[in-house]
Image 1 (cartoon, one colour):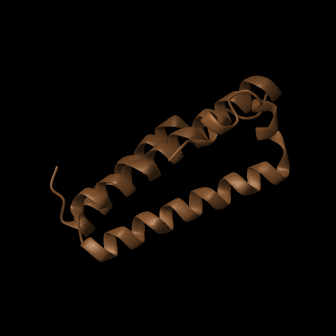
Image 2: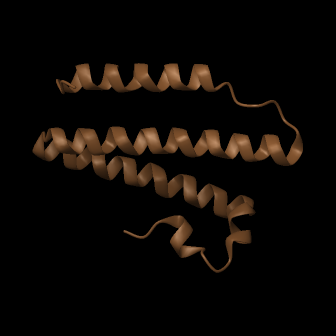
Image 3: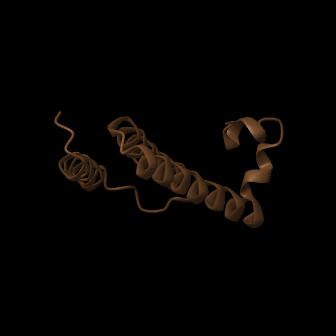
Length: 102
């Protein structure tokens, strides 16, 4: 599956359009549902890890976006300590729920 950045590589300014933002969010939701459906069918820990990693990447992308907005518009800087703590808690809780031992 191609990433959004690949699709809009030559016209990245489209990514700022509200309709495109909504479409990207919808596609991400669908991807998550597909991963969940595959996991339910196979009960495979590898898919659980894949899903968890996708969530982590999404969180990292959101923080990067916040940082870019901070630099560009002077918004409040992201709270990295809280973000890292939340990320670790998410990983540990998800691993416990899926019985994946790190």
